[in-house]
Length: 154
Image (tube, rainbow, N blue to C red; front, side, top):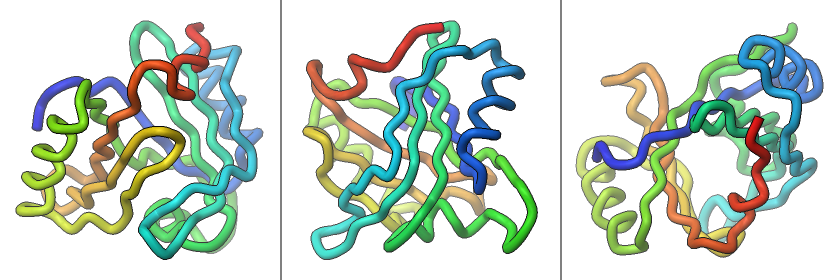
């Protein structure tokens, strides 16, 4: 499970403020924003979140604000009150669905996988590796032509 790590992701309870702060820290000025995005978290559930994606020096930064429904994997580390932007996961992209499936099977043998499903033309899952690493690991496969092609490079 060590191929293609390139994403650092944060969760927040103030999307615009987090984009500004992460942007200032990492010199990011242009994000792809997906506000109130609805996506499947399993065959029977979905979450609603704001997402922002941007590349800087080959690293993809993701900012997520959970809003509703099955958003517990993002919301669980945020405080009940007061502003926060917290590191949540590293992302690992796989070139093929077979590579993704193999990595997911290995992750499930070691950690809980609280959400994951097919969405936006690809597939993703979160492995809760916090007991070993302090954070989640997102595994994903989106083929060429997916929404990831539109993420701006800063």
